Image (cartoon, rainbow, N blue to C red):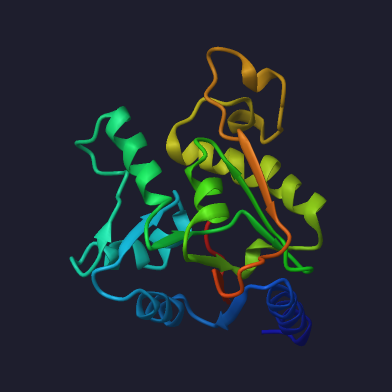
Length: 212
């Protein structure tokens, strides 16, 4: 890793800590996975946001081993109503796990949600654990929002099969996305600038590209 990249990571970690969050850096996702799982006592309830990062790191798979009570909204047999209820209950779990759409050099977390459980969990859950690849680090809030709307949202729309304008050309057509035949992905925007309850949010940065 280049010295410039190390400097960016260290600045981001320091900023997150200054803003009242715990923050750690691991070179590999396997190291991060072990640390994340070690934070969650057996028997705890666990909610989660939709996150490709949690899947890529193997955290999602490990959570299903039976040690924890996991609110999994993605079980195939669930109806839409059941899935929504599990999402709501997950935000009140002992631990809420998520990726983040972007993290700035000033230690701000930027997240856009389609259904609201992600933003609700990040804002209100008792304990929040965030895992993010270094590809999520951006200069500032404006760059972070653009990253979501012009990169993450189109990529996730393709992955999830959502029919949105951005899926076709990578461009955010904010007003067109309200048309009845489109399913919006960007409904709530949450910017966490700081955390008053020190230790409620823990951020694990991983020295790999993870998620969109």
